[in-house]
Image 1 (cartoon, rainbow, N blue to C red):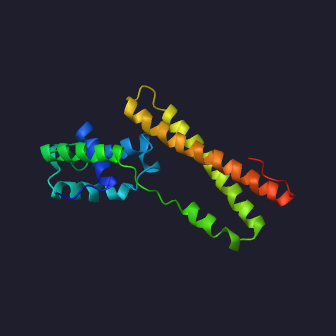
Image 2 (image 1 turned 180 degrees about the vertical axis):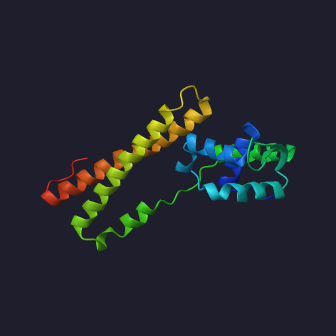
Image 3 (image 1 turned 90 degrees about the vertical axis):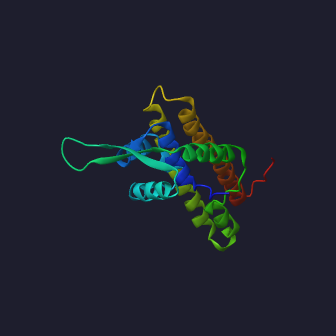
Length: 187
């Protein structure tokens, strides 16, 4: 069986199955949809990923767009194998529950070596960063009225995850505060 695409490759392949695009257009869609919130696609890696997908026979150049000035832009679209691979890998990504290893768990596991005041400060900084992230994702979602349901679902899933972390963090910070004041946890 052929090598499965990485999450970054699958994301680009899916955007090309949706509609043939050139690299700069892919960048615009990635930025508008907040794709960098959940993938490791940097602007500089788009062309590298396109080359990998092309070399594996999953995409092909379908046209060259010639702007009024400057270099022609290569427009890529999926091959038949690219469409099949995208469908198969996307289905697996939806169905398969895979473990996530967030660094916060490593910090929690090593919390006893951190001075209690510094733990509270670190969790306060995390709460502030989380609030900023929630606001940014909401703003990105709200800036795109009329998006297809699958795009809205990506934003909503991200917001659900962030909100779940915010609730956990609020509870844990309260528990630490209660421990510091000698109050008993009655949950």
